[in-house]
Amino acid sequence: MKAKTVLPAVAMTAVSMVLTLAVVMMWLGAAVPWPVALVVGLGIDGGWLATLAYERRLAAQGDHNRAVTAVGWAFGILAAGVLVAHALTAEHSAGAWLAVAWLPIAAKALWLVHSLWEHTALTPLALDAIRGIQQEARDEAAVARARLRAEAATEETRLTAVTAAGARVARVQAKTAQTLAGAWSTLEAARKGEETGRALTSVTSPVTPGVTPRWELPVWGPTEPVPALETAAPALPDEALDALVDEIRTSEVPALSYREMAARFRAAGHSASEVRLRAAWKRVA
Image (cartoon, rainbow, N blue to C red; front, top):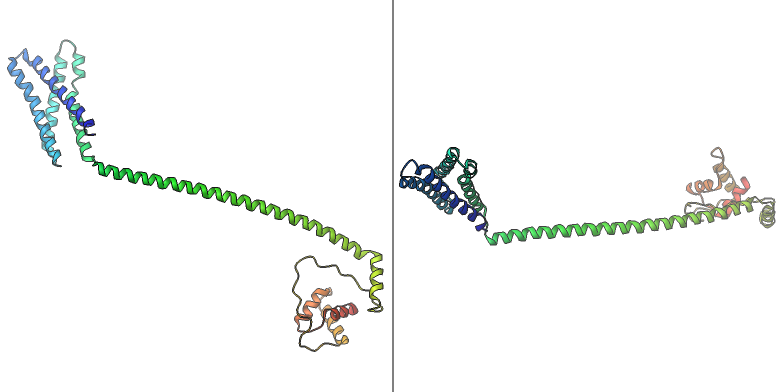
């Protein structure tokens, strides 16, 4: 991994140094003796290389010196300035020389990138630990997603089952209500029929002479529990029972029904069997 950043920086530095030396030799060689031009070129490249080596030494120790860095950038700018000046004064291929004048600055930038990489580099053990943490986080996220999908599917199945059961209950209730309505209609027709009245009269006349009983329809709906038929209280005679039933019945206008009268009769603490209480109701009504 280190070679991915250091090799391009080394290659760019070498090309820049060779190019700078060649330009100095060609540019100054015509004006001064070539040994002088060689010393100038090697001085520029040597100063740049020396400051770069010192910067690398400080970086290896985990240190940094701004003065050394400034000197190194100064040598890089000087080399780039030499290339630019040569390109501007060259009679041939000025554009080509100007195009490569940025190489010293680029080499310094590559070394800066390499130093930043070194500052953020981690050991293989740390990288393995980071990869393990990331993999664990991905596994937990995948398990959580799978759990949510399974819970959603389960809830959907449960709602479907509840809805189907509710529909079945509704159909059964509707069918039962229809059956009860038919039975109620049949009972009402039988109650209002003339033959039914005569039949009931012939059956009940021997029991209660002179009284034509009225056939009450069964109650369709919630019912209240009936208290004990007889309690420890003394039984009332028929006259007192009739007077009490009539008083309770006519206590409100319109008169109370038998069920309301019987509820108030027993709530008041009186005692009478259902047969006697209904007979008293029929006598006073």
